[in-house]
Image 1 (cartoon, rainbow, N blue to C red):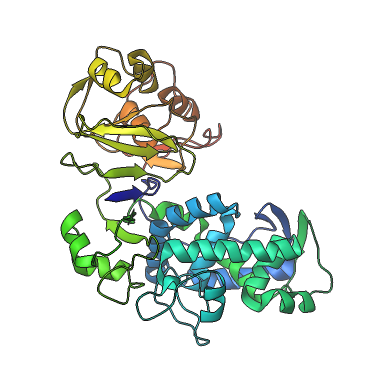
Image 2: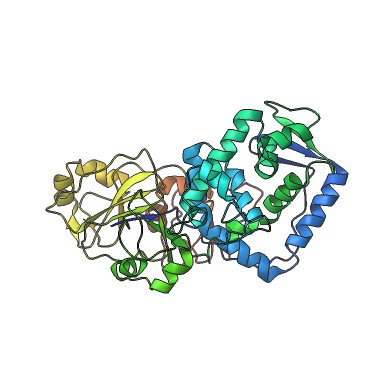
Length: 422
């Protein structure tokens, strides 16, 4: 079995929406600087206000998006698609897998059958990949890439997602190929305006929602198995798997190719102990991380990938010398990579890295919980302890963390922004 855990979620609690986000006069989308005229700003603000009018429904959508965004973000990164397009799935379906439009477009990205099949998705009595988050997201990324090859403009590519390349070309007074700056007016195509309203409305809310949203794992070795068999294997209720995997229309998963089975996990901390099977567990997928061979004589070691780094977890306590010898790496390097001393032990069910940790995480913030330390947070996200301290403007000898403190994990906290507590 292979389980892939997509990137760790931000641990900042979902808050009710006190007021609608304000529409700016300038914003960036897919690397293009957008100037928003006053008339367009008013129209966008009206759309944002309507999106946030019901805090309950708004927060449900934000939390659902927070669960799926790590999957979408990783696929977009692999496909070279701008990250901003992830808000398109909120716009199209609200991340409801079996959403159906009045024109019979289906799934997360609202593909019609003909277009979906052109993009390589399987749709028949056994499978509808439009409802599979991995397959459909990759197809959406490829479709948007095709549009951009035609226009060399991501705003036009966005419009073409709704009305096709031909319709978009006919509707434009001129094609702004290669534009790095554009002006958004009230006459900009409605679909583009609605998308921008979703991005403005949900951008901050989704980041906050990552605390309460379940993590979504991908089980990828399901060929020939039923969801019931998988549920017994990984101890997740079968009816829960069915809710997250409506793409499967028959009892067993076909074996013509690899299908991603979504598995929710509602309690992201601490990591679930394992029983020494040969499962491959990875936090945040990465295409370019080298595989570390785990000897068959060490069944208690599980392989992971966190923040794009190779890592391991053991279900028994080991000495660093013993572990390093069996993995054929330097004990000194291993200690350095993990900010520990050579005489320390490798603790059970704790993440350890086989490469040097990075300077930033894949998430922006982390809210400190009781008994957490800089080291434990560093190991959770694959970020150097010294770098976490620097990003949070902590003194050299400042090591104590107060529960509730919000730590910055991707950027340095601005000087004029006080320490925040949740």
